[in-house]
Length: 174
Image (cartoon, rainbow, N blue to C red):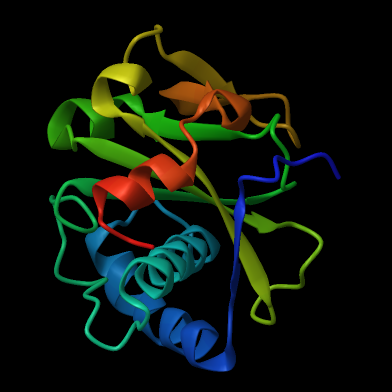
């Protein structure tokens, strides 16, 4: 599986999976268009970010961010797909217009890991809001049905994201 050596591997443990599973119901109430699976993956990605950025997940709030960014200036975008430099950071057009965070961070969880037993994720890179909206959004078409998913997304290929080491320097993270 081709991925950049700059991708940062983060271990997912049982505590992270259990918390994401518990919080799906509360997240579902706030984000009714997302499936329970999407909510679970999103929460898991935010916990991966918290573990990398803060070294712990206990104090990280994944439920009190309704209408806000996930972590101050940072919006974490997570996909369960192939871990590849050809994967994309995707931001729905309506979200990009409402939130406008300074930074987006892409977390990928390999799709070959069974649901609710994932063991690793990769933080792939980051982009500014201006980077994300630089190109027109694309209509999303389901790979399974071939039909429109009813929304458009801004997309940046993982290989075009800025490396995490540059964000780490901005965060004074060694």
